[in-house]
Length: 276
Image (tube, rainbow, N blue to C red; front, side, top):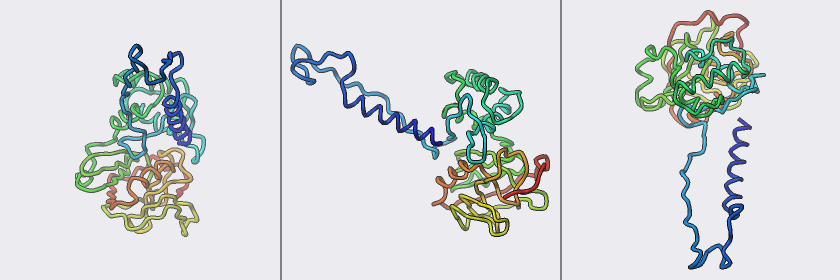
């Protein structure tokens, strides 16, 4: 995310410099930049306005490119998510490992070509938007309640997926994990009743940043343990990547958010001790 903000800052600086100086190689009229009867000033060119990227936009993800890697919970570049989604889209047939190598780049190009996008091998914002939309899991199983008025976060325990809805429109989706056997995230529909941006679990002495509590002690929150959403479980909460939990927080923390938990518990991800 830092490199994304840095890129936007550099772009803004570049636009400022261009606006402040005449273009290189352009002749300047002796009468000044205003021109003269013999040399009328050039008409200003109106460039198309491009809305700056925001993580609050529909289907938003950071740009992911060659040699990026998910190296720790504090350095997630969404490479695993990219590889999972490319697999579901039929463009990637290698092992999901969190490293953006040549095979992943080829798969991104393959998907871009299929979607009629510019073929660069870089998972741009537009590529992510197409890919997330195309790879919503178990779409037919999403409860109708999620598609009603208001803000809804709907967690599919079997699909390891949270979808975010507003007034019947799906806005985004993230890969997550829920509770372990005996600590399953409880089924049902509840409204978020408490929020804490830097919560720490007193029961497990574990950080729970961007916590949004919806059922007892169960919450949507960022995980300081999760590298792969399909490995291990939590003690009942819905674990997000830290950046994803912050993204959901920034969109919904000042809104009434209804959380619906559905789907069978997924035992296939139980390969280690539960963590918060």
